[in-house]
Image (cartoon, rainbow, N blue to C red):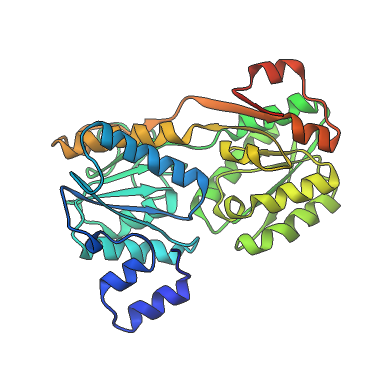
Length: 337
């Protein structure tokens, strides 16, 4: 169960035990006997992309003999989309004496770097900007990162997302972006998107939001400005409210593109190019297994993701009056009809 920041702080401030505060944010390791290493797992929101990544992590550990409730114990939580909660949860993980932290995303990693001592290994995944989180310096090779941290780098392929939009509409000029500049991951990827857009002769019309509740109005505003497509970056506000962007896209017959593969199932999402999140989590899980077996993260390099999945929706194309190029459909890993 997710917990809003004010409720979280109220519980903590009331002097209630750490078990109650933790239980309010997710599964509590203390509610069942601790078996094997205790791993605290934190993601920013409860949504398909981070969930799939975390499950891939668990699969990799299970394949190596670390089975939940038998030979490993997980405390799994989300921060309800509130940045301050990430620090509070990490502090609770520290009080629970976790043996390892899994940070699913840039904000959880940033909190882990702030709270966790060097004695606690931190593994990260679903992370676009480990540098901004304070984990190390690019490209994250041996000696270029903090000695207790290792993980996978998943900066979203926003340049390829723009290429996808141009392949569908070669004359496209103005692209709409909605994001929360207060998120380090979002601000980082927005900067990359702008640079990639400039290379392609595209203009980014950006609308900033503070939370998911502002996304619908932002999308409507961009539609009124006659953007020719919506694109998505690694942003938690739009992850939580991407259906609102898709709704506006359908209503105004504007193509909507994403970097999150699960989004292709939403009516209104025309195309996706992004990482396979299960693979991301499994790669991080394999790194974690090496650490659990005694290898130091300091001897390991960060691993960038390299393989993307392409998904398109013929159903959305028909609904908005767009014809998908035959070559694009043939290349797609998945076609929604």
